[in-house]
Length: 454
Image (cartoon, rainbow, N blue to C red; front, side, top):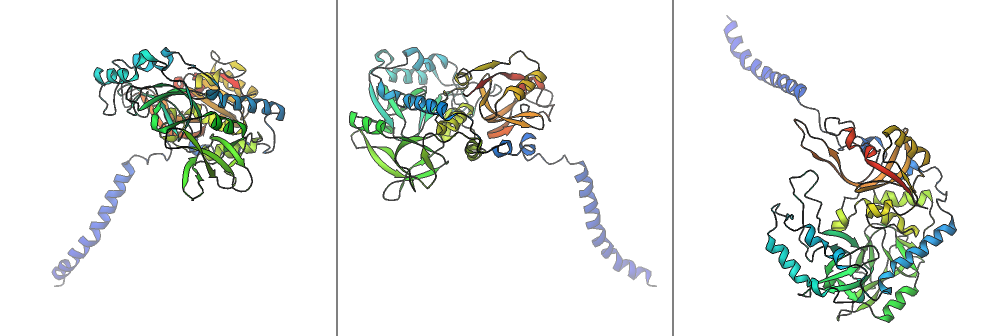
C-alpha cells in the first residue's frame, strides 16, 4: 500500500541527489581528459634557476678588476662620454646615417601590418635634404630620454610580419636610445625643422628637435669640469627644488654630480626658452646615485643585476626598455666600464676566444673552465649574454631576450617562444619542449665566442 506513495516521494528526492552526483562524475571524467594547465613560465629554466644574481656570488666583496685597471677604464668612459662636444664636424658619413632609406625601399611594413607605400618613404627622404648633409655642426644635449631613429619619424618600420621573428617588437626604424643629459652633436636639420640628426657617444639617429637643446661654451665647460655620478635605481625620481620630478633616473644614466652626501644633488639640462641648454639642479633619493666608478665587486654587480631582472624587453631601447646589448652597456657603465652599443661591437670589444666550430659539449666545457663569472660576454650573431657561472654543471647567463627560436612541424609555426624580458637561463632554454625547440636553435649551438671584459 505504501509503495506508490514512497515512489512518489523518493523519485524527486533521488533525482535531486543523483543529478549533482552525475554532474560531478561527468565533470571528473572531463577533467581527466583535459590538457594539463599551461606552464607558469614559457621555459622551464625560469622556474628552475633562481632569478637572482646573488645565486652566483661566491664572495660579495671580491674585486673583479684591479682598482688601477678600473680607473683606466673609467677615464676612457668619461672621455668617450663627452666626445660629441669635442668635435667640429660630423663623424658619420652620409651612407651611414641615411642607409635606412635604401634598406627599407619597397620592403617596409607599417603598424597596420601592411606594406608602406613608396610615397611615404619618398616624402621622408625629401624632408631630410640629404644633398645638403651635413647642414649643421653644433654641440647639444638630450633634454629627456630619446629614441634615435633611422628615419625622421616616430612611425615604425617592420620587416615582413609574416616571417618568423619579424613584426612587433622589432621596429627597424629604432637605431638606439640615449638617457636624458647625454652629450650630443647635431649634424643635420630636416626641411620642416622638426627633426635633428644627432651623434651620441655610441650611436646616431634622428630625434625630435624640441627634445634637444644646444650648448654654449660656458655650459659645456661647467658640465665637463664636474665629476660624474651613476644612477643606480630604475625609475628613481630626480626632483627639482619645487618637489616636481624632472626626470626618472635609470641604471646606466650618467649626470654631473654636485654633492654626493645624503640625497645626491645632480645636474639636469633644461631649455632656456630659446633652444639653448641651461642647468637644473635635481635631487636623487638617498643611495640612488653614486660617484663614478662604483667598486667593481661581485656583490655590487649582483645588486645592479637584480634591479634589472624582469624588465620588459625593448628592441633598440624602445619604450625606455633594453635589448641584450643595452642591458650590458647600462650594467657596466656605473662601474666606469664602457661597452659599445650593439652586440657585434661588444663581441669585438676585448680579448676574445673563438668557439664557433666546437661541438656543444666541448663548447660548454670551455665556457665553464675559461669563462670568468660577471666578466665574460657570450656572443652569437645578433645576441649577447653575460656569463654568471655554473648552475648544476651548466653555464648560466644573464640576458635580455625576446624569445627562443622555434622549429616548424605539423602543429608548430616557426617563430619565437616569447620570454620578452631580462632573465637568467642556461644556454638551452626551452629544451624541455623538443617539439618546439630543436638543438639547432639552442643558444649554446649558436654561440660563436667569448669576449672578456678586462
